[in-house]
Length: 614
Image (cartoon, rainbow, N blue to C red; front, side, top):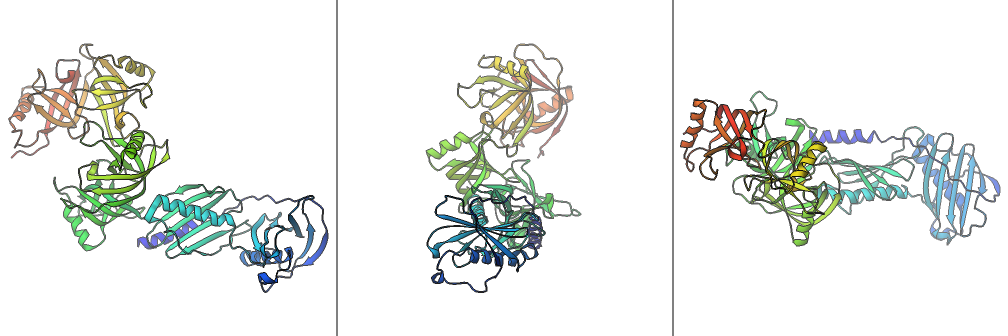
C-alpha cells in the first residue's frame, strides 16, 4: 500500500510542473539579403561525408521537424513560406547568422564558420504573439539534440547533489538514463524531460530560461522522492527533502503499548525524552515478535536500538512509521554501519556527564549519537563546530552497543560545513530555573561566548547565561568574576549555541547576603531524590531536583508539619545499598535567602513516593 501511495504522490507532483514564463527574443542586426523559401521538411538524414558546406536551411527544417513532433499545434504549420534574411553583424568574422520569418513566426539560426562536417547550428524558434519559444542545437547532418544542454546539466547537478547528500538512498552513479519528452499544456515556451533508469525517474522541467530548472527525483520501489531547483551555474537548492525511505540507524528508545481499543498497537518512544514518538512495524513476523516482546518492559531490559526505514505522512501512530529490519537489546553487538553524508549539529553533553559531546541528526526527529573524530585534526574541527549554530555534514562509521550518548558513537573520517547559521535541531532539555545557585565566570577575550554560570556545589555543571533585558544583562556582567555567589531565576534550554550547549535566560538575580527573599516560589509536583548523609556541610538532608537530568540542583527540605517531617525522616531508614531509591514528587513552596543547603529551603506540604517498598 505504501508503494502505491508513493506512485500517486509522484504523479501528483508531476502534474504541478506546468509553469508559464515570459521570454525575450534574440535580436541580431546587420546587412541582409532576402529570398522566399517554402518549408521542405526532410525525410532522410545525410551522412557526415555528404556534407559539402554550411546549410542553415537544413538546420531550420530539422528543427521544425523536431518542434512539430514535440509540440504539435503549438508549433509552426508545416507548409509556411519562410522569408530568409542574413543577419550576421557587420564586421563579425568567423560567425554567420540567418533569420527566417513567416507571419508571427521567426526562426533564428547562427553557427561558427568551421569545417562543414563539424558545424553545429544554434536554433531559436519563436512566436511573439503566443509567447512560444524553443532553443536547441542541430548538427551538420541535421540531428537535433533531444534536450537543451542546460536540461542535461541540471539533471547531472541534481544527481551529484543527491549522491553526496543522501548516499545509498540516491540514484547510483553510472545509470543509463532513457530520455523522454512531455510537451507543456497550452502555449508554453518549453516542456518536461523525464529520464528513466530502472526504478528511478528524474523529471527536469525546462521553463525556457537558463536561470533555473525544476528537478524531481523519485523511486517508486523505495518511496524516495525529492524536489529542488538548479540554477545556470549548477547550484542546487533543495525545495522538498525526501518524504519517504529515510534510513534509520541505531535509533534508541523503548516500545510503549497502546490500549486494546486504540487504532494502533504500539509506538517507539525515542530517547532522550521528548525526541519523538513513531509507529512501529516489523519487516517480518520474527521482528514483529521481537517488538511485541519489548512492549512496556522495565529497566534494564527496557531500551533497545532500532534499524530500518522511516516513512512519514502514513497511517500510523503520530503520522510516521518505522519499518524495523533489525533491533538490538541486551548485550548484542553488530558490525559498524557506514555514515554517508549525515547532516546535523554538535553539542556538549550538558552538566556533569560521562561523555563529552553528541551529534544531533537533522530530520523529523532529534536523534542523538555520541561523536568523535578519527584523528586529532578532525577532533579539533568538531570542537570548533560544537555548541554553535553550524550545521555540518559527516562521513565515517557508527558503532552501537558501546558506552556513549544513547549507546552509539560516530567515528568521523570526514567533515564538511553546510551552514554557519542554522536553527537549532530541537532543544534537548528544558526546565524552569528557580533559585539556581552559583557564580558567574568570565571567559577570555576572543572566546566564542563571554561568560557562564558555574553551578554549586562543585560538579553540578556549567551553563551559558543571557539576560531577558539590558538591566538583567548588566547585573550578570557586574557579578562576572566578582567571587559573589547568587541565586538565579529564569529558564534553561540545552542543545542551543552557548557555553557547553546550554543557556539560562535569566529573569531575576539576587546576590547572596541580601537576607531572606520576599515572595516564596511555588513548588508544584517537582520530581527528584531525597538525599541524606555526609557531604552537606552543617545540614543533614536535601532534595536533588530532577536527579536523572543533567544538573544536580540541590535545595534544603523541611516538612510543613510534624507528619510530613516524619515522612521525610522515615525515608532515611531506607538502606542506601539494598533498598529502593528514594525518588519523590513534592508540592509546597520554596524560600531562598535562608540558612539551608545552597541557601534555599523547600517547605513540603504534600509528598508522593515514586518507588515501591519491599
